[in-house]
Length: 219
Image: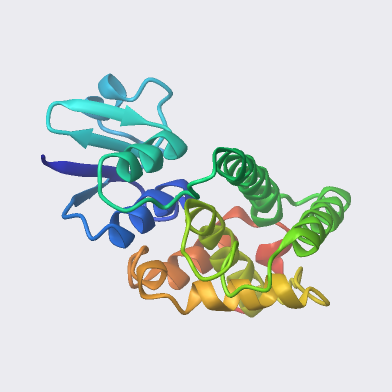
């Protein structure tokens, strides 16, 4: 089975799939495209015109949650809990992580102060909800890495960069979420799920978008 991910270097959803592949120690290749000017072959095989795509031999899968589930289901050892009810709850929190990524997009790009302030408060509120349900750690539900961890790791990486580059902090007072974030950001599969120059590319994106966040990044 030949696995090829189609990506662009800043995509948090692709990063989820990369983490799952690395946790399962699966061999794969990755092809980067310019999502603003995608090649014709990509337009032909991507129903929504988005990444990630996972090419499995001659078949194509799209949507990060679907790709991560496929990776999990076709390999030994599960990144989901055994209990069906808990597994369903995990899938709900994966969707919750996606809503947080929509909010961070606003944080990254908006030049409207009111929209920016609202996004900061929305992010803090959502992280507070996670704080209230987290276990004692070190991961989302204890010792075992899960697809929920893979879903939140890209968010935490970007929140950490927003804090470091622009002084935008959303984790203050959230000890459990902060500890979970630190644990994930130290994990090798997470660190290697992005290109080495990711922080520099992220910084460049903030400056290029010329929003509130970008204005806080030093030249």
